[in-house]
Length: 333
Image 1 (cartoon, one colour):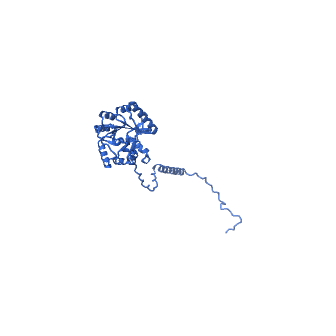
Image 2 (cartoon, one colour):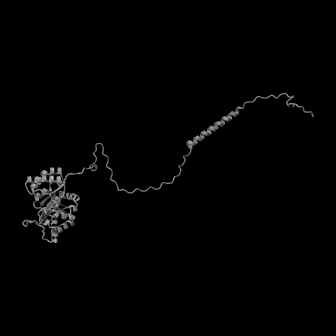
Image 3 (tube, one colour):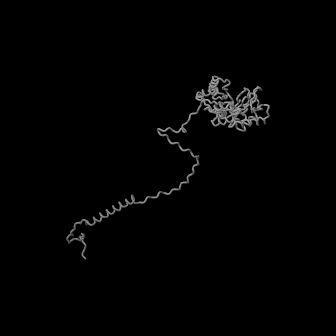
């Protein structure tokens, strides 16, 4: 075995050095494979995006608890249909236009003593105004004229004969007197009412003595209250107790403020009509009584346009209803 020297001899010693071959570039095939892989990856990415955007079914909304059933609304009264809106050239219906309150003073006029004169009674029934016509019981034309006046829209009263202070002045058929017992007063009053068709109330003919007697008035007002009839005190005596006692009995009642024709002359009647207008304008209301006379009717016809322009002329039932509202029974003196 040869001895080792201090200097190691390389293995290549004595051999010629190996020749290093140059590095070859990667083959062209590998580049094509890489390009195809990238193209495939890009195509898959685009397909996934199209699927997500256009082909994916919509996601169901999250489930929520069902709402409680609706509480039924309270039933309301049916409302009237709204009126159609008015066009530019169409006025709204009068029923929906607010009407201003009529604040004019109020008057009522009662015409007494009808039933004896047929022609005059017919003329009063034809007057175009809301007059109240008062008929005497048992008069020959009372029934016929009361029917005619009722058909013409007039309100009808029984003009009830009552005892006067002067014994020489007899009230006439169907009259009531203080000396009569209550049962007789009630019976005669019922008979008197039966002779006047459509009577809605009573006013007194004469009666200056009878209306001062509470005892005589009690059975009279018991009948009127039971039949729900009206009463007007003609106030033939300043000492009359009729009006306050009627109100206390629960009767719709009033009392005269003015006589139109104590003087029959046309000028005097016209003067009283103007006094009636002034009284109503001063107090807010007034109640007048006239009589079945041609002079009274002609004077009223002449001044009726002026009266109705200044005042509200109303039927007696309306007048007494307004009076009742304005003056409760406890306030009647």
